[in-house]
Image (cartoon, rainbow over all chains, first blue to last red; front, side):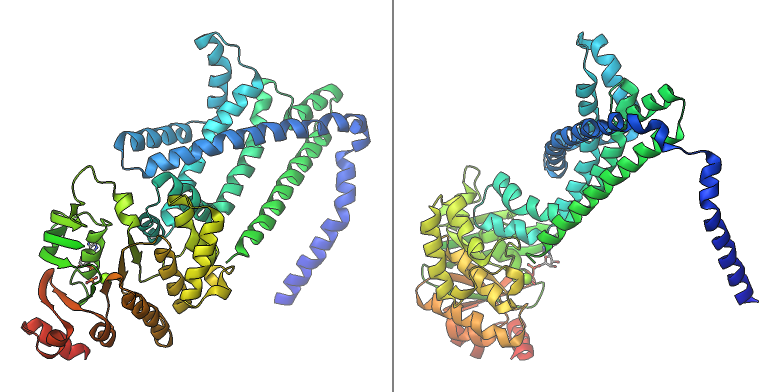
Length: 245
Length: 240
Ligand SMILES: Nc1ncnc2c1ncn2[C@@H]1O[C@H](COP(=O)(O)OP(=O)(O)O)[C@@H](O)[C@H]1O
Ligand SMILES: [Mg+2]
């Protein structure tokens, strides 16, 4: 009885797999239709990457600063950092991006370019998330490390920078990589304010050629490759760091 | 060199130290013993203000370090501390652990600090481990590195909080040997320990802390053969 069931499933899935090419054919997927648009789409890679990298570079120092505020003994700093985090976690990123892009000109009369608006929104937003991760990482470092530093007469900034943060980062590296991946994918939101990133290029090609499936699948594939490369690099980096233990 | 006056420390409602007044002279080696939870660590940590006293005063070289405008970092540079769990910096090599303080705090040149560090590592018998990371060392080796790290600041006082309690029995001796050498060199030392043989042999004085009080303050001969308080008698019966 049991083996019949398994057998059935086996045959069934064999059947499905053998049907796959026909299914695809039935969808009428034809990548040759957009072959000459592929370079245009691929030029979105440097755009998406520059949004993401700039946002990480700006967001990260801010995240460290916020994390240090959160663990400081000075209450107003803690309140500020906690409120900041709740604000950026409590509202949609798309809203933050739109506010910065559309409201800045109205507010201060500066018509902010999409790149600046996006990097601002993404770095402010990712700093809110990463600061929580970093705070946890700092608190997870054995308090004996702090005491050892104090008994040597090491100043607080030096202790944080040389002794506590390197250990904290080692532990939270996987979490930070996850946040960077999320940012890379969320950067597709810049397509809503007109920047020609990967995502936007996909939709441009789609509306030009009146085909949707092929360009979007190409875009999806490129995102996937980017994320996998990042994951792979992070894993290698992590392994190298672990070797010192 | 070290003097406490009516030193009190409370954690919330818990009074951990009650009016401890004592003095440690230059070159003196003082062993602090007593039952667990008696306040030994807290007392030691009040001496370099890792814990700030609730009341009372701590004098180092006749300077009251509990007053406001004291640069505690300067005071601490002159007081090395060795912890039960070593607290080495895991991401730095043995030599980097030892030279970190001299380079970053005392602004010594790297070459000079390396020379000092290698000298000290040789003294604790670990010169050949200078490039290893702490995770590669045994407990006894870690503790000897921790001692070298503290000595690298060239302090006049060394504080030890149960330096051998986390070690496997066969490694206790190598650490105690290093400490003995240090005591013989004239270092002023305050040592919280459960090693009664060591305390008796090396210490000039025993402080017996029990329930947050300094129940006994006597030379080792007197303390171990003829303790005044019942508490000390009971404690010695248990551990000897
Ligand atoms: N940071 C702290 N917060 C609250 N209670 C503490 C703290 N440190 C020590 N204690 C308490 O103080 C008492 C004395 O501790 P300690 O000085 O470590 O004793 P000992 O070193 O003699 O074993 C214990 O009851 C301990 O639980
Ligand atoms: Mg203790």
